[in-house]
Image 1 (cartoon, rainbow, N blue to C red):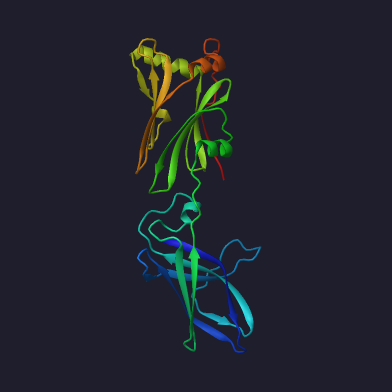
Image 2: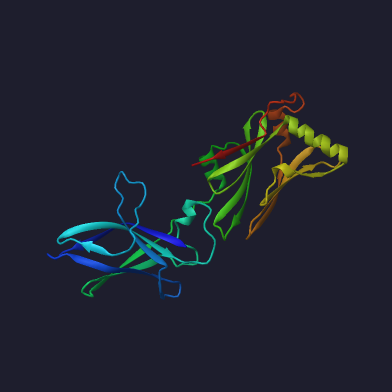
Length: 279
């Protein structure tokens, strides 16, 4: 179900006699211009400053007092084929199978058989998808080496990997989708030496980093075939609608300068995994 809320709908009884609304129905316009019956419609007193939740009434029958304004909130439910969004921001939008702007027609009928209709339009806000610049601003990333992403067009999501310097002691790999949060792995001197030793022992030019990977991403460390020095990473991202494969070369001169590989010793207390959430 796709839910639509009208926070305030004002009913004005201009007559000197009370009026009863015996039916409130809802229709929506589909992509072909046809008006279709809504799955359900609910009424609640409009929220005040002290209210947190709507108090939905058992039915849509209303008694309007004479010469008085009465305010209600309206919820309209529409059945659609698809999956719910991954966040409240997604779920508050009209589903992509529905037209934009999305039109809802409310029809009232009173005890005398008189009817009145109101058409309400809803427009989806444009999605803000993560980019290198937006990620830098949202999460305070600095000195970015690479930003790799793949889009899920069905879910309106962007999955991304960003590589950047955290300080002079380590590179940081952060993985996320949308702008809700991210998971982080660190590449420090100790781990670089460990990867190089593994490659040299097995004569491997590639090592898949299983502990860094997920259903939608595969990170592979790349080594020189003669010296087995770590020189880059292959990042593969996969969604239901797209794939991205990119090789990121590490700035070796800068790494030697900033990480001081030959001089630093292993740090047993290093942090290797964190998760950050933005609410």
